[in-house]
Image (spheres, helix red, strand yellow):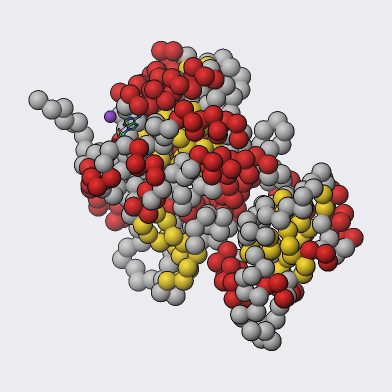
Length: 501
Ligand SMILES: NC(=O)C1=CN([C@@H]2O[C@H](COP(=O)(O)OP(=O)(O)OC[C@H]3O[C@@H](n4cnc5c(N)ncnc54)[C@H](O)[C@@H]3O)[C@@H](O)[C@H]2O)C=CC1
Ligand SMILES: O=c1[nH]c(=O)c2[nH+]cn([C@@H]3O[C@H](COP(=O)(O)O)[C@@H](O)[C@H]3O)c2[nH]1
Ligand SMILES: [K+]
């Protein structure tokens, strides 16, 4: 007979935290959100890689490119560059993160001289940046031919079909700096010449970075930035259990700090083979997470296989339709609670702490606190990051409101690159994700700061100022359907619409 779980499976919104004693030391400023990313042995002082905030961005085309990776690393979190692209393209993204330096920004707005004023305006509308690099091939690292800022054109006086070459500031009039320029030198040049943006170029006159006037206090603004010993930002990269023999070496060579096998379902021999390959070739020097699992057995299998962390969650993501199409999955809270217990059990048995990541289904900021309280060491978020300026997708106006595009990795849109040719017949493939819009929410920095302030405040209510203590001491209660009604506003008429999350 099949096995039946005695309890239904639950998710975050069905739980509440019950406050603990708040002492004088419990104030948000005292809270540390530092958390382990990869496994470590009992007694080892420092985890080989820790996050300064418990957030990683999802391994998705619509979420984790190099721009978002740099923005998130500045806050103390980590991105996993999406693996659903060619090995060369993924490695190039990793390389761009590793070669970006604090204060040195890879140009996110680029056109050729043949583009028009209309293109400049459309680009500005789309990504909000007012400095456009004019390069030979419209890439961020192409040969620099000029620059367009809002000082170069007047919309009221110029036709929008005028080509960029006619109004850009051409290369010969630009003040630039060579590759070896330090941030301090760059700022002196900016100051002496009253510039807003200083292009940094290599010896072949290819654009490398911009230094913007406003980024001067960069290092002071980002005290939690996640950097390696050479002050380069940390970055992760997604891999799959098929082309790892080629992909892993390319990503390692590009400088990826940690890898993660990206799959809807990780309790499989394919994941073990992938980890075996890495251990054989690199020993423990290359860190790799695995998943996703939703129960004790899945966790133990991957932990024993040597995973550096294990990702939890099947079908809970905002764009997921796996539960509907395949009928597999488990309520995210139930999955997390069981896997956290399995991690603790495994730690007791072996002395090895294998961190777990709650992946998918985080909608409200309080879900973050709940997931951590239920035992997650860190959280993977897709929809959350897709809404920000730094995510790779288009910002559009739909029904009078700004939205950003967001699509699942199991949607046809994401699968249009050839990875799926590697397994099974294409005509039998079915979609496991949707293509959608999410409400545009502004900059990553502002949102992360706000969300984490809420998490810290709640931790103070629970009487704890670090994540391990939250995991140990949190008191959680399931709530009845009726008490969920009690938890929202009720029996009043709102004077204004809206309200918090
Ligand atoms: N977390 C979630 O709930 C879900 C996530 N996704 C996302 O969609 C994307 C695709 O996920 P999947 O379809 O699970 O990709 P996948 O590549 O892990 O699996 C696709 C199919 O290939 C098989 N397979 C894997 N390695 C193999 C090998 N070496 N030889 C032979 N067969 C092999 C798998 O068993 C599976 O049937 C990922 O980005 C994933 O994160 C999709 C659905 C649900
Ligand atoms: O069923 C699915 N079909 C998909 O197409 C898909 N794409 C991503 N994912 C998973 O969802 C996570 C992100 O979830 P959120 O948007 O809720 O943060 C991600 O981190 C993934 O685990 C998918 N699941
Ligand atoms: K399985």
